[in-house]
Length: 455
Image (cartoon, rainbow, N blue to C red; front, top):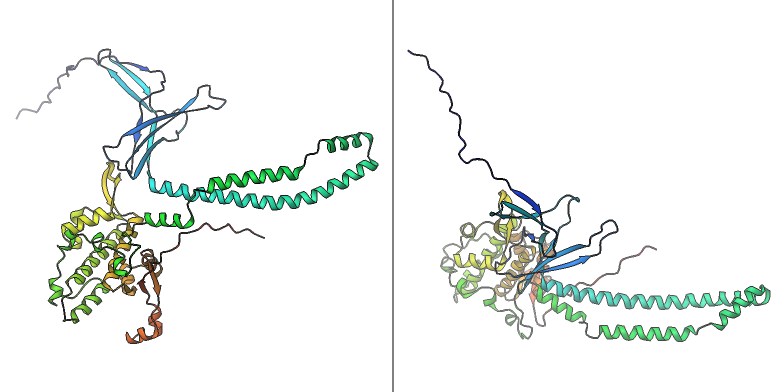
């Protein structure tokens, strides 16, 4: 058998030929350079229009050339997007945009500032300006008042000392010091008149600036309007007129809620002890059908499951189809939950940006507020929140705060009430009642507390 011989590799031939020569030049700095923008973690509508701005900054003594700051701003009816330059890592890190000219094989490099976008909620800006503005003016008024009282006391003591030194100088001073005293007395100004004029001017300016400032009640109403609670009818004469049922459960959702099994008594079990206790109570009443109340209870159980699901994910949710399957809910209800209680964010996991739906802390509170209103409708606007607290795995303080935000007062069970419910006094102490009554009582807006000082 002939021995195997290795085949020689043929020399490779140059197919593409030598690479062409490129000329790289750096373009002079201009007032209108190209701009690089990044928006990690922010989802902006594709139709948003942005306006560029430039600001010239006086340079430090070591830099001969004036620096420029660039800004991009765009907005939607509710949110503003602001792009600002990020601080540079050292003096030798720059970003350039290259423009290639195929005719001359030249690449022209342009220095490009890099901007990073942040999101601004317009309603918060307006609220903060009003609150901060009032705080500044009130602080100025208080400061002026303290300075005026303290200054008068200091002036009285200082005047006595000056008068004593002046008298001694006139009697025992040198000719030079006596001459200086006479010159001071000739140039003396009546300070009392000057202080009165200054005080009148300051008071008039403060009154003019605070004339149109909103009151504490108006600021409280503005803060309350920004909270994610259902629309409130402040002219309601009865608790059932305060909230509109369709603002929480739309007709498309209501029509796909099925409770025939509960009506027929086939399966009265529910994951929620709050819901289960009430469907059993309704099933005992055979005098009429309770379809509406049963549908609300079924919807409350869906909301509890949705709230617990987003809590387990730290606010992040899987795709809508997976949520629909996990909660066993209709597509119309799943779509409504995502539309009302989630917002889209961008995740950079896996090396690529992708949109995910998440429940922010404010939207999680929105779920609790809407759920609280539905529980009030089911419980004739007087609800024991003990079982609901256990279903949600929350502290009593957190849940009572949610009911207070929708206008409830928190009360304890009276002795006749817990005796009729066959509870002891110790057991009744763990139960709290959320009662919606007219006139409505909402939590007062927080006020700034003065910082404690050590004595």
